[in-house]
Amino acid sequence: MAALMSPSRTCCGFVPLETGVLIITIFGMLNKISGFYGIISFDFSDPFAFAVYIYSLLSVLIFAQGFYGIHTDNVRIVRWYTIFYWFDCIVSAATTMVFAVKWYVYTDHSLPELADDPAKQREHDEVFRMEGIVSITLLVCLRLVHIYFAMVLTSYYVSLGRARYSKLAAAVDQDLEEVGYHRH
Image 1 (tube, rainbow, N blue to C red):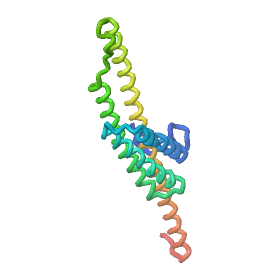
Image 2 (image 1 turned 90 degrees about the vertical axis):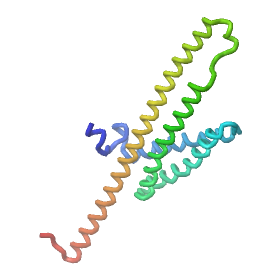
Image 3 (image 1 turned 180 degrees about the vertical axis):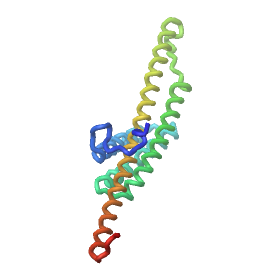
Image 4 (image 1 turned 60 degrees about the vertical axis):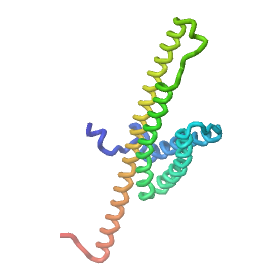
């Protein structure tokens, strides 16, 4: 358990932390670009879905800024990006739950052409139930991966802050030595 809570130096056990965070950010941007496709579908019938599309498009800008911060080792930008990534984890989980409940609970999936054939209707319902279980399992796994990626990004931010502090401490020590200060 302690291994899960300590900052990692790799992503997925073998990718260098900075490379992993860059890959996570690139995939995050690609994922958020899907909001563009939602908007160009011109389906404004569901205001909640439309708001999620807009959120996704705005998120692309924040992910791009985070990418820049990672690329330039800018601790301040990476800190804000890390906070946003955790926020995005929560928002994504909430929207996934809303859409899943809407699809699996409130959407009628019956087929009128099967109304006269109870055996085929029962088979259809069983297949849909099985698909629902598989889909929900995959959605939960993806949310867990999203949380893991947030933990990787947090580890990177912490390591970046430590490296900056170490450089600062080394510079102060060098300045003190140059002015003749000796520790006892």
